[in-house]
Image 1 (spheres, rainbow, N blue to C red):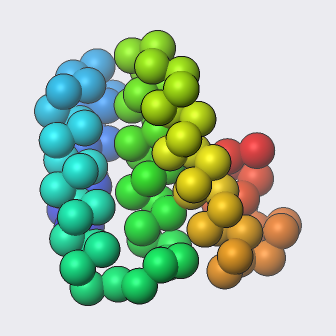
Image 2: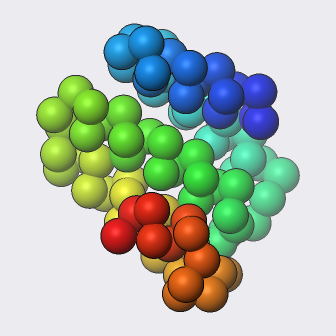
Image 3: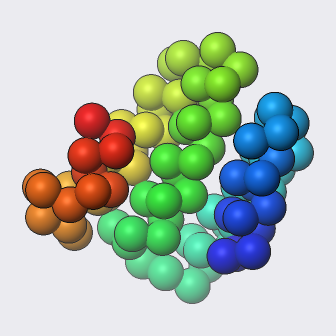
Length: 88
């Protein structure tokens, strides 16, 4: 899952949204199999998916994933953590 997220981030940087979403979704599926929510790695993956949706101007989906990531981060990290600040 870790490698899939890095692959997805690379695709996102290249503007390849379909490939990025596919890699992030595979990573999310794997992380959900082995981790319980809320978990920082699941939140990180949802954050990445939200960024891809924002990149392709699907604002509603972007907000859904970004808000879910934020809620998970806030449930497990202190409010002043950089992961929380990056979404806000």
